[in-house]
Length: 317
Image (spheres, rainbow, N blue to C red):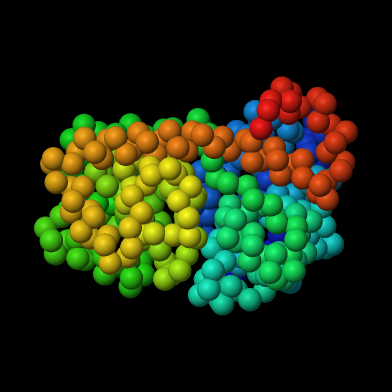
């Protein structure tokens, strides 16, 4: 059961200018899965000069609340009084057929209540529009220097790494790689520096969808590209990375990994990892955040404060 989302108490005098409250919705040991995006978000707000603060399961009645995390598991009875007025939901789930909407049918109604939705996927935005929800804005999970934190080891002892929930279609690929003689690591519930340690030791990080049809997992891939990782991914709805990720069909994942694990392919792995890093750098995260804050129909009260927010509000998009 998710903790009831609470309203904040009386603010201290030093906090009254806080414009945006980042409300991290988390209810179990997996809440750190969103930490990388939250770090990027806070960095973007700092770069833009936007006053903000971070809270866990806490709604501030005097601020614009940006809810991020396990929002899809919130039930109606757990909402604060007043619902989601003056609220942004940063929507980070896949909304394709067979996704969590079947498990969490209330989620779509929750999204309808938000003043604004930020979504990482144009495919998701189109789906929301088809459901009569026209408050969604595309905010790609781009690059932020704060994410560049992995020091790769020289002699990497893990051939293929996958991190994420154990699902039959994922396990089948990983087992095939093990059967072919490769050293494979599958981790789940491992976050932060411990996860980064596994990544640093891996020649390939593989991305396998949870469902048969799924949008590209930008949250995972953007972090890997920021850290110059070589990634093989199951093909998705689009390739936003200019060839910096090797996208192949599900039934080609094993043979593609085998090809790039050939010692003769190391230079190619390094070249593509650098290409992916350059591709993600071309999409600074703060630009998408700025565009969302400037969007019409959002929060006109912000217009009074933008003049004080710094040079990034006049930098060309």
